[in-house]
Amino acid sequence: MKRIVVSSLLLLLLILTGTVGYMTIEGSSFFDSLYMTVITITTVGYGEVVPLHQAGRIFTMALLLVGVGFVLYLFGEITNVVVEGGLRRILGRNNMEKKVAGLKDHYIVCGFGRIGKVICKALHDNHLPFVIIEHDAQEVQQINELGFLALEGNASSDETLLKVGIKQAKGLIAVVSSDADNVYIVLSARGLNPKLYIMARSSGAEGTETKLLRAGADKVISPYYIGAVRMAQMIMRPTVVDFLDLTVHGGELGLRLEELRVSEHSAFSHKTLLASNIRKKHDLIVVAIKREHGEMLFNPTPTTELLPGDILVVLGEYKSIKALEQEL
Image (cartoon, rainbow, N blue to C red; front, side, top):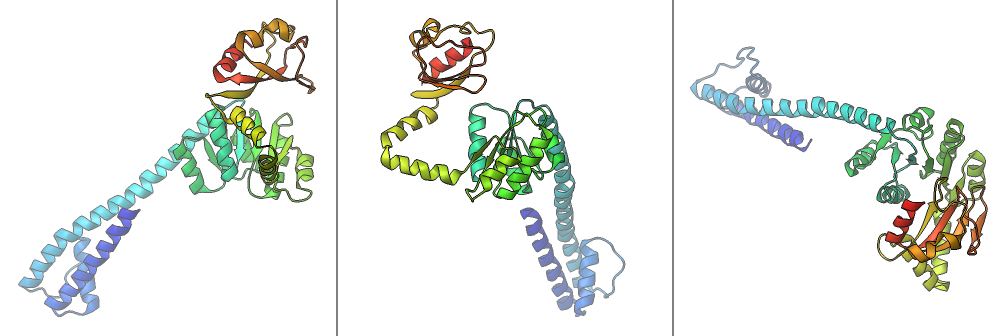
């Protein structure tokens, strides 16, 4: 586009130069000089409206050689932008829709604002499949440049949600800026997939959380409330907050809190914690166990039995956690 703008300005300058040249050399009027300039650089050749002397003909030949090059270059750039750019967008959109159609057990992130960007980065870092719905076309282009799957559209539209595979999705995260929009998104998503796990963002306004839960959200999060609580905790319990940061955001370095599911065919199934040797073999601490029906057991005793479907919350080094995950 910059090249097109620059070329257009140069073309206008060329037309102005040709017009002034004919007016000076042949003494013609402004309109006749402009007409001569345009038919010369476009090679139309309707006929000379001004009788040309030798100096005028030399000027015309020079104008013709320079002008034709500019016109061809400008038309070529316009063709590239309009034709190739349009084809690229169409092919890119079709390719994106094919990739989205192949997703299964993925997450749908509605909105790519400040919160949405952090969520998508976390999902990407943990190798979890996801697709983004964003209504801003320019934002969608930036998302594609990051290598993320994105679809332009209204996240509360049934058609858009079906395109991103909501019936095969594992969860949906509604984090657009408006509480009303999040309510509509949750309503549409719950109607299309009753079993879908739905998390929604709340501004913290009174009654918003209730409306989102009533619409079908499984979990409602208010970033402002969480941020305020965290700031207060950092004042009152800074060491505890530092420890939690280390375990939650430590990544592959240091300690880490992670949740692992016990499969039906696991060797740990129907064994006690003591018999499983998780602490001795992997040097991991089982902080809590969440039963399949929802019961949470904190600080389980060595005699606590591990059942299929249990989710273990373990604390330890990243490598040890990955090793235990392979056995579970």
